[in-house]
Length: 336
Image 1 (tube, rainbow, N blue to C red):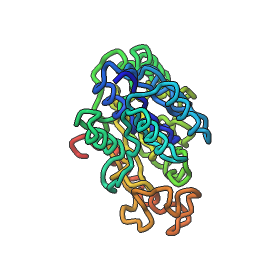
Image 2: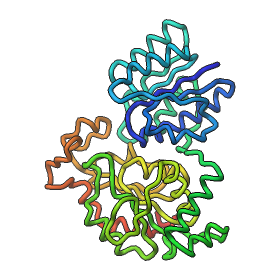
Image 3: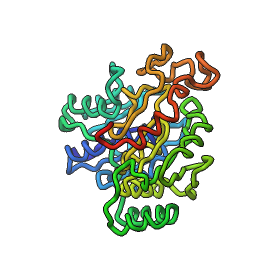
Image 4: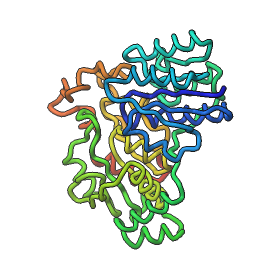
């Protein structure tokens, strides 16, 4: 193998994080190959310091097929892997490999079960195809030492003296200690995934330690705006300090887990059994919802406009009370 191309054009930050273990497994399995990732521009910073990735190419929204065609023509990859099949991209990848006598794995969504995590299924399919080792790993975003230092400094600025002691190398308290920080991530890319704003405020008021937030939450200290890698570095510092990041099924919460922070993720319309984080605590609201479709979420009646047939607000998220989330944040690892 001289060139490997991985295509992930599903559109979200979380989607790329779920495929990162496959990126790293491909790099390990083919150490002499140049691995190129084709994705959307907002996700590119995740790969900026990753030694597994030789190059990154980007595609414009609604013009993804053209970007795939160009990448295949420019790179002539010996192996192409794609998570993306819309607009005939999967068929295009398979046809290109057949024409040049190379390898392609163009369907990582084949017959998905409702209770297998997406990122782990990717890896098992690739292992079955013989292109990576049969070893399931969690997502990891690579940060440089300078970025980690900047993340600690940002946490010191937001949190104060306790963070300074942690940054200086003092032993961090265990998760759930009253002196550890909690970072709330209240927003999500889709309305159907958002926990009600009033509950974020109630949660902030009941947590014993310093409460920070990415975006406005009543009762929490809002963190200053930063770029994606800066946010990842701050989450890494929160993890080092024994803190927890709490949020819905969204990219920033997956980023927090991928840099080593403890997470509590709130799942409503999406099934935690399929889209849950590999590490951390996944809380599923209304697990018996008759309208949830774990393997076809975009076909759910609530998906695009957050119109729940069971309640004025998404009933699955209303089924996650503040006390349950608080208990998960404060629980010791042995209690989870």
